[in-house]
Every structure is written in C-alpha cells, then in structure tokens.
Length: 430
Image 1 (cartoon, one colour):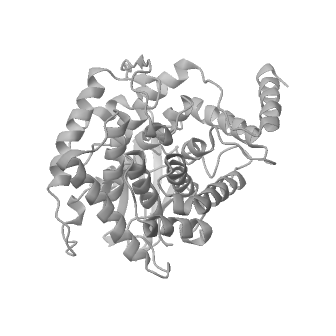
Image 2 (cartoon, rainbow, N blue to C red):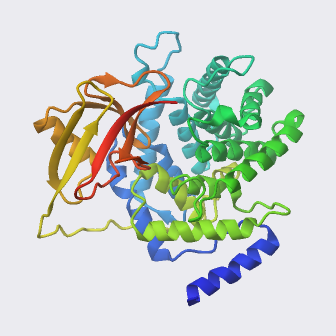
Image 3 (cartoon, rainbow, N blue to C red):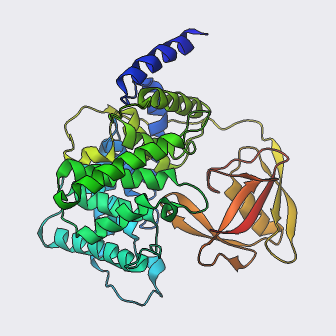
C-alpha cells in the first residue's frame, strides 16, 4: 500500500468511528483548474444560455471571478427579471419553450441568496408568487391520490422548495407533503433507475426546512425522510466509490456532508467518494457547467443549505483564464452513428478531428450524411429531443449509448467519442 492508500485507510478508519461525512481539503491547483472551466460559460449572456447555477457554485466555493462574476449577476437580474416578471400563467402551453422553467426560477432565487440578498418588495413578492404557482401546478399534476407525476420532475420540485426555504418563505403543508410521499414511496422518484440526484435534492430541501423550522407540523416526517434519503444514497454507492454515478456524486455529498448517522460507516463512504471524485477530476471527467457548479461547494465544505445564512465576506481566490495552445497535429478519428429506432434504420460512419464532442459528430452528420436531429437548451447543456425527424413523446427520451449497451453519462456537448466507437441513439420509454 502506497503512502496515499495508507493515508486514506487511516482517514477512513477515523471517519467510520465518527460516523460523520467530512471531505478533507483537496489540492488548490486542482480546484482552480476545475473552476476555470466555468469561465468560458460566463461569456454566454443570452437568456437561453444564462445559468444561475454557475453563480451559486462560485459563491459557495473558495474561488471568484471578480468583476466578471458581478457582471454575470447583473445580466442574470436584467434577463431573468424581465422575462419572469413579464410572464402570465395560462393553460395555453403553445409558448412554453420561451418560459423559464421552475428549475431556472428556483436557481435564480438561489443565486440572489448566494449574494446575501433576500427577495422582498413588490418584484420579490412576484417572483416568489410565480415559484409558488409553479409548485401548485406540479402538485395538481401529481394529483390528490399521488398517482400522477410532476410536469417537470421531482428534482425541480425539490429545488423549488429549497429555493423558497433559503429565502424563509412559507409553503403549504400539502406542497411539502407531495415530496414527502414521493420519498416514502420511492418508485415515484424513479425514471427507469434510482435517481440519486433527485433523492439528494429532496434531502437538501428537507434539511433546509428542518434547519429553518419552517414546517413544525411536519417536523417528524421531515426528519424521517432525511434519514431515508441518506440511507438510499449510501446504498447506491458503486464499488468505485460514486453515489449513483460520477455526476450525481457532488449533489449527494452536499447532502451527506456534516451529517451524522449512528451505526453507519458514513465517514468511510464519503472518503471513498472523495477519492473517486479526485480520480475523475484528474481524468478530466468534469466538463459540464451544472455539475462543476455542484462540485465546487463540496470541495469548499459547503452545500446549498448554507444559503440559509451565506457568508459573503469569506476570502476567495481570483480565477484567471487559461490560455490554451492549439495542437500542431490534427488526428482524424472515425465514429459510427446508429439509429435503430427509425425506419429504415440509420447507420453511417463520420470522420471528425480527434477531441471532437459528440455534438460535433452530429453536426457533421447533419451536414454531409443525411442525418437530422433537434435539441433543446437546458442548464445541463443541449438535450436531444428528436432524431431523424422522430420527436420523443411523453415519458420518452433519446438515450445515448456506446455500442453495444453502455449508456453515456454525459450529454452530447461533453462526451468525446474515441476512434472506432459506435454511438447508438435509441428512443426509450420510462
């Protein structure tokens, strides 16, 4: 066993005795290089590309972007308030693509709180009312018998509750009750698999409610739900150490950090997750802005729950952009695209420069190989909505796989195919 292995073993033993999830400090250079990945995203200032999660992640980290960060918040306010305060609610969903989602509104409120602002006054009240209206609409979609599903997802539902909680806004018991029921009857949180992200977001919302004492009538249920969520997340730990997968681990750790659970080797599990994250960091696995913004707080010992009382005066290190030198050699790789869910089945070989993303492959296929696809912008990047003219219907999605049957954990903008790979796009129900 090397020095690092012995050190982790010793820390794991201590953590197991304490049953506390703590994340030891990570090398500052590694953290800075991760934060630098967010800087290019801050150049995209149109409403469809703005991502409040980037601002939240930086404010909860030990990193800052200085004037650039302040300007990003200014643009967020201009765009989001203009768009959100101009919204009118109706049953007509014809222009729903132009309306910010419940998740976007919730993250915007988290961004304001990360700057030590509380939503108040006439504008603030309208923003809060809109988020509460979103939650009421989702509650109706779930139904009084809890047999339905939210129009968006339980992830966004939990995020909405969390955003209102950190601003100390009260919620009706029935709104919180829907999320409590979903956690108790966990099949409601599944979309073909256990969603660690959704569980973690629900747990963070409940933890905020518990710490703020906003729901005294449901305190016992909330405490039990937090315990259940933690147990489920721990059971979802992979042999490598991730909770669910590498990209759901940051949010899971936000929930587990500084937790205490009797009879559970929580410290060991968290140190194992930390080691897995470090290995993934060194392999360059983190390219998605949303996931990076969820990981940076963890590396600073923070979580979204800290937004109840944010520390806006804590010292942070200034991030400087990295100037990359373009490679002198340009290797070409071959990627096979396969779509078995259409008739006739599409299959073609595409040549692209090495290091191209899957999105680059799709763009070239669309230009030269009779391939068509459509996407929708989300905070996680472009989401595939249609392939070869076939649009995913309700409870369907276009699943990306590396042939023969390995699901891709990254989106089309982040995944980098290797030479000779076959990428399959399969229309899947959930």
